[in-house]
Length: 334
Length: 109
Image (tube, rainbow over all chains, first blue to last red):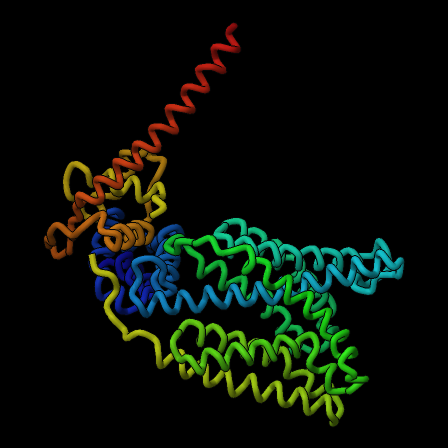
């Protein structure tokens, strides 16, 4: 076996074993015919383009779309659902932040949602992050309406300033935020749904056009996010400390717990269970730092309840999802 | 199914005779006059999708100099899909040509 063939076979290890069992010899045959006789002395390597094509094939095979094995399709659907959940989460915050900002402008008060002095770098980055959040909302609507390319472009635009906002200060001056776990979690909440979007919605996935009601659902949830404090006051829940821990991220945790319970009770979809489990672990990572930051009391107890819910339900969802995955079968044959 | 350019070219490469992987790569290169050079990972992704849709099928297997060669052929359904896509592309090209003719005539007048 020549050195080039040996190296190409190593590249093919990116593919799942079941796929290699079906296709490896055929792909190696095509590669060696294409490359011709190359002596080992010139230290040959497969070109980057060939490696990239195998990597892309590996993603498409593992996160299946049309024509994939049921197991690969279930994994692919789980990743696509995680992307949708992440973008929906960001859309919800975009709506509530925009409405809050508009409210402050119309009242003539100084807007607190944009940090720093006017014309400062901090203010500029703060506005860019806000604009980026809106891009994430557009990305969610685009993907629900079947516009995959638009969704990917706007999601990338949405993530870029946030990465700059978090990474640049960390590189220049060490982390100065709320702690490395908190900063890493904030980045993960943005980057993981983006990675899921880019990997899961590949060329073998055929997009469908969902209804506008679904595309705009996170915006409605964003309104609810703003409306909940008012509703609590109207209900006469005057200044209870615990209620603050069920606002904002707490509301998301509560909504997630309801969804997780429904999925566990129905025990049908492996993809939903796996996607919600991954989302739950992300939310848990986002919630955990509050345990160390809060003094012992009612608020701390509320966060404990949330973390316990997130941990136990995520584990149950993962077990259910993995258990209900379709059995391993060979890759689609020739 | 949304037919991409690599899928269209791979189907076209199989119209006259069954071909194996490298044979399809060579024919696509010839058909596109060197503009499209499929990578092997891309080609097998395309073949997976066309096989799953029933547009191509395995014709035969051969072993040459210890190497496995699988030959693929165009199915009747594949020929129909290719014909429809070719007609659609031809209509678009015809419309473009007609508009360019009008533009050229307008510029000359």
